[in-house]
Length: 352
Image: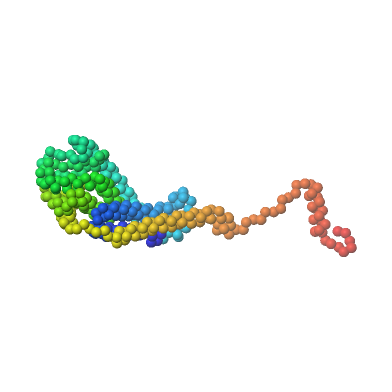
């Protein structure tokens, strides 16, 4: 447990630095799934490492050791993690779980709000057109989800560009991209180190929808032109929904659409999978070492509790029990005569 408990923390730092750069070079769908998997595994590994570190400090409290029936001295001898590190781990675990709970409550409220908004829109078709001069277009996840476009946005685009815009928003709904965003928000709440993965995830989701729209209309140039015009038209809008057509880094999206589609790359995926496997294996090894440490401490406590009194440090010998005294008078008399016969002086040729 000396080193393995820290490996998930190190893997989180490495992926926070390398994963966003690698994701921009992968096909968007593969990049989104890879980032989601990396964020989930590293967040769980982060929480697991902090939990193991905090346990080493909690287990050394005498009251806790008494309830767990293990020896504090044996636990300290088997676990080299210092008490200061254990306290820091406990504080980090408390902060991470509290932030995760707050993010989960906010995410649930936001999802309920989007479902209510989707149900309150006029009409019963997938597309809802708002009589609003402000250009805007976004997807509202619900049951079912709705695509919301204002008349101001439709007036800014041509027919092919409108088709590309609708295909982009439909890709958000059918790909359930709101679930990816919710997952990345939760993992970023666990540790700020995972926020770069969440930022990169938002970009690759927009790229995923762009590539789907390009495949639908059959022209990457048309989609690039639609994204650029929609972004310019919506530049005056202050608040944009998470799954808006003008979300993400628009210049990078247009540049990617004007270039050939990114080819599949095996090396980043394999390297990321190896790091995640290392994270899981190290966490499992640390948990196994922690369990073995507790078993050893419990065995030491049982050995101390069942030790004989003369080994407890007194040094006094245990008294030897004497033979019982006979209570029968005849047997006592016979015994007396027997002792008198054998213990009296012996004279050769005479009687005692």
